Structures are given as C-alpha cells and as structure tokens.
Image (tube, rainbow, N blue to C red; front, side, top):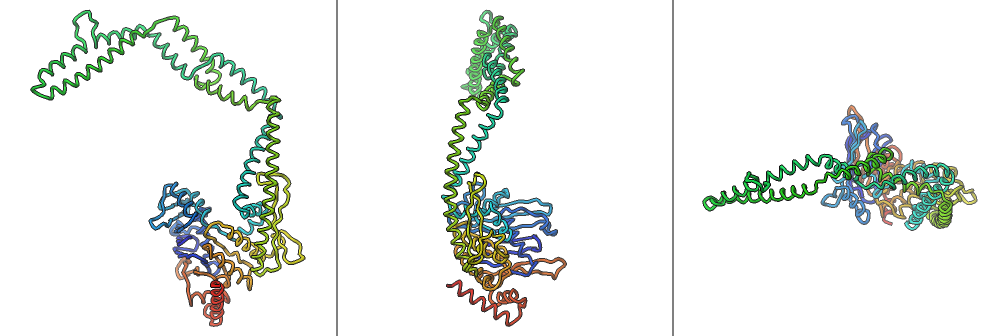
Length: 568
C-alpha cells in the first residue's frame, strides 16, 4: 500500500502530506481547493507526463514523494526490479519514491534514494496502482479498449493464448509479405542476384585470406630491404657475441668479466653479490637476443622470384579492394553479405512453392487460433456480463443489464478476428445499445464503477484510485457506490476523490483539502478529519452548512449507517 504522499509546489498545493491508511481513504474539499492536484501528484509519482504549467512559480519546482509498503508477489516483483536497477528498500522494508519537475519542464526520478529513469517509476506504478477517473470512462467507450478490457478479465490462460495468436500472426504476415515481394519483384531480384554472383565468382577465384594484404606488405618490405637488414643484424650480432676471428671486446664477454670481478669481492660486501646476480640476468637476456639474431639472419631471403610473386598477388588483391571494400577483410565481409542476400533474392519455383506451403500452414494455424480466441472471449463475455449486471443491481440499477457482444471483425489481426462491444439494456424490453448511446451520465458512472469492481475482484494492483467516478450520481445510488467502494477496500487500498457525502461516509480515513486565502498567494493543504470535524465536513457536503445542527445530525446519521454497513 501507499503509506504516505507528500506534495510540494504543485498547483495550489504549497507543501502538504497525506497520511494514508489501508482500506478506504476519501479525499474531499471545496471545488477548486486542489483535490485534482492530489491525483495529479499520484500520476507524477508513478511516471505520468510532467506538465511544467502546474509547477508553482515559488519555489519553481514541484516535488512528489511517496512511501510504499508492499507484500506478497507484488513486493517480490517490485523489489527485484528495484534491486536490478541498483537501489534497495529501506531497512524497514518500505520503498521511497520521488519525482521532481521544474518550471522549465525538466524532470527527475528517484527510487530508494538512487536516481532512476522516469520509466522505472512507470514500471513500479503498473504493479502497484490503478487510477480510474472520468477520462478512463471515456477511454473504455472505445471498441479497442473494450476488447482489451475483456481480454484482461478473461485471465492468464487467455493471455497466453493471445500471445500465441500474436506470434503466429506475425510469422504468417512475414512469410506472406516475403512471398508476395518475391513474386512481384522477380525481375529486379534476378538482376541483383546476377551482379552478386559475378562479384562472388571473382572473389572466389582470388580466394583472399583474412589479413593477407598486411602480411604480404610486410613480407615485401623485408625482401626489398634484405641486404640492409642483413648488414644491421650482423653488426648487432658481432657487438653482442663477437665473430670468433679476433679478440675485439663484445657484450657477452664484457658482462662475463664484470660478473667475475664482482663475485671476487662479494664475500666482503654482499651488495656486490646482488649486482653480480643482476649482471648474470643481463647476460642471459643478451644470450637470448644473440640466438634470435642468429635465427633472423638464417631466415633472411632475397629471393627475387618470391618478391615477384608477392607483387602479383598484391595486384590481385588491390583489384578486389578497388571494387568491393577498403581492405581484404572488408572484401571477405562483402562476400559473406552477398551470399546471404542471394538467399533473400531467390525466386526459384522450388523456393516459391515452399514459401507458399509455409504461408498456407501458418494461415491455417492463425485461423485455428483465432477460433480459440473467439471461443475464449465469448466464454469470458458471459461471466463478465453476469458479474457486472449483479453489481449494477447493487448500484440502484436493478433492471439494467450489461451485455458483451463478441462480433466478427472485418479482418483477422494479431488480436484475433473479433470486435467487442459493451452494450447496456437500461430496462427489460429495451434494446441493447452501445454504452455511449444507451447510458446517461449518472448511469455511465455506475456502469463503469461496476466494471472496475469486477476487474478488481479478478486481481490487479493493490492500490486503486477513483477520481470523481461518482459524477452525476446521487441519492440511493450514491450510497450504493460508497458501499461498493468500501467492499473493495476489504482487499485493496482504495483512494477516492469524491463530492458525495454518501460515499465519503464509508471511509476508513477522511482527508480534506482546504484553501488558505489569508496570504498574498492562495494555497491548499490537506488534513485528516475525525469525529466532530468529520461530521461538519459531511454537513458541508450535504447542504453547504458545516455549522448547521440539522446538517451535522444528518451527517452523524449517515456515518452511523456506513459504520453498520462496514461491520456487516
């Protein structure tokens, strides 16, 4: 659940903290007091779009902080995601989220004290909170959203079936498009394939090897300068080892004499013994160099025939690099790409027949899966319709019924072969009309609330936010909405922004957003109301008279009725 929400510098809210409880939390207040900013703050906290126009000029930035305390599978999922991102919950298991938006529109997010992308807040929000408002009601009037809603209700097995449908449809369309393209552009494909084959034939004849051009260049350079290299190597060899013909000093002999001289006095001063050992190491290194110089002299070759062969080979390689790439490795890579492209360009009858068979196989599979999806939707539609209609009866619409029509779509898509339409039968004998045509404003609010109650019973996030979904409703229906929300609050944390006292009376915690116009700038704050204060707030909502004895009495009666309902 969301334990606490702090909002600073957002709209009319200067700095306020909402202490939230489990169960049903109600937020009320005069029109324009800032109730909407609470919902806006929640949206920001969970990755919603930042609107710089809502940031107060002073201090020039808006800050929203929230503390989550989760349990069960949701806690495991969220904590794993947070840990993967490099953050950790607090020692008490709670998780602190924050979002900052500046007046210039810059936005920053933090999770567990670590800076994070805003998308991380969105991912957490999907697991933790679901916001339902009048805009969501309008969204659910769209056919695509109604189909998506039914699919969510249908459950995990249906989602798995839909996943198979989407994957198979994607493969089918890819094969069908590939086949159509090969048939439509056969001439152009054949022309491109001929050019690629010519290039591959030329490269195959030369058969370049990786790094061959660099190796040949280095070998040619050695052969071209073989005599100079030999003279330099001989001079170096004689300097370190002598030539055996005279007594001229050389490095090996000098190092040996120096070592023997030091060893003779090492018994007097141990330091000379250490230096003698280092001279021995130097003599070993010189010996290695001498051996390598000898081998180098043996390997030097001034064969003019070999040099001519290298010149000819380098000429062949240059002919390839002028056409296909900057170096031999690039030529080899070009050949690999060309071989792959030839497979893509193939328009042979055998391949076309094979692709056509694969297209037909996948099309049959798509058709079969679409049939299963349709059957699953129709089964879910019956359950969904029944459950929503039961909720409507409890929302003072006992004779109304919601039907879910699963209709054949004009074409098969990745989502199946169905259109879904929610229809309302306002009373027995009335025609079943689409929601947007068959429901008044108040009826639509109740229908949408009934749908949300059914959704919540099927699982979903642990915190549910309802933003004035009771608009256009009053009387007995308002009481029933409060009762339904209170029932939801037995298994979820529920936050309700409402103008109806009948709904507010069912709250486990009642928060009031109030304006302060005493200063130069209007601000709003939030406070928890209990007992007498709560009765006065309900009286204000009932009749606009918070100090009326009659209004307070009515409010206390309403609170008593709600308390009995909750206990029952």
